[in-house]
Amino acid sequence: MKYYLRSCLINESSNYIDLVTDAQERVFFASPNLVSLIVSAPDQAMPEFMDSLLTRASSIFCQTHVWPLLRLEGEVHEIFLHLRRPNGTSVPVMTNVKKVNF
Image (cartoon, rainbow, N blue to C red):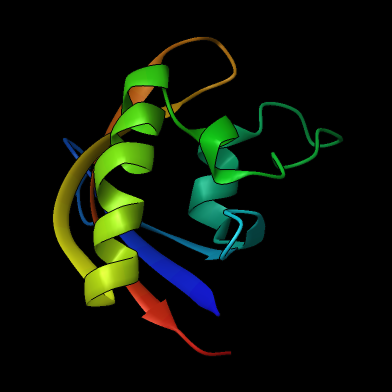
């Protein structure tokens, strides 16, 4: 079981980022747009877990609301989250999440 996340960057023109995680929230795939936002150096690795990509508040919201709803309904629409950049700033994203079988 995998979870497919498609996010639209707020205040960016038509930039989408894609992320696929497994049921344990381990990053399975990240689109180049997402990698360029999160990884600051070419030799730096992409974070292994979804929680590492989010601000603390977004991580808590996902744990308490998004993941339980996703497990029950199979999809969640228009969730507003913040991604955490290596320099400490955050990037707001509007996210849709869907349970998929790969």
